[in-house]
Amino acid sequence: MKIFKDKNALQKEILKTKGISFVPTMGGLHKGHISLIKQSKKSKFKTLVSIFVNPKQFNKKSDFRSYPRNIKKDIKLLKKLKIDYLYIPTFKDIYGFRTKNKVFLDKSSKELCGKFRKGHFEGVLNVVNRFIEIIKPRYIFLGKKDYQQLYLIKKHIKKREIKSKIIECKTIRENNGVACSSRNLNLSRSQMKIASNIFYYLRNLKKKIKKNYSLFKINKIKKELTKLGANKIDYLENYNIKSFKKIKNTNKKYNLFFAYYIKKVRLIDNI
Ligand code: PAF
Image (cartoon, rainbow, N blue to C red):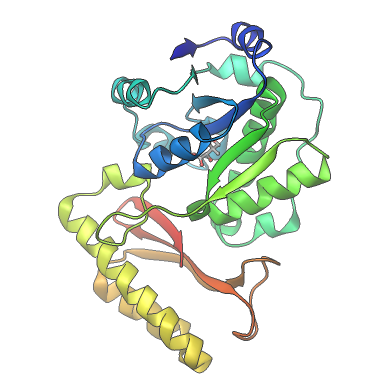
């Protein structure tokens, strides 16, 4: 595994390859990332993983500061997984150049997480657009846990006619049902149990509302989640996963999207 901290050196190396399969991350690697990397390694291209905690996608400084970081452990894991390249850029390496493409922000970026984390998706698309221009990957592997992010990146790529193909990967869960996330590293054992109870409660709720949508009573559900230990609920909404619009009935395929806090830790998922 070759490690790069500078895009010029990285680009020189990439030129020698047939193409790159890219797994962008912010570190704090978990089973979800491992699964993305394993899928990437099955492609015929070299696998490049990036670790960059992108300050521009955090709407609160405190959230940026407390985001889990464990670079030594991450490097050890990536070596074991035998990836080809690891890119750990500095802020300047990423933001110190003018991009060719302007970020395209679909209007759905103002909904769900976009409503509660001002500037978040602008920040995500900005950094992803820059990574794409540096690496020009053939494939980009992204997880469905961050479904809105995945949707918006796909829209940007389509609009700007970028050649990279997004590979959507299923959400990987802990044995207790909770979606793998770097943020889980900030949860205590008892808080993880709360997250697990909330997951099962909502999964069960989804089964019930599929049969009878009138059971989707938002205030009652929010009260129930608070009883289970959620401290603040940002949203709980059913969205068609193709059109990414709020559903009016349960005829089409939809997911229940939610974001809530356990103390200071914000968790999102969709089921
Ligand atoms: O999903 C993430 O970890 C980040 O949003 C990403 C795609 C690496 C951009 O910083």
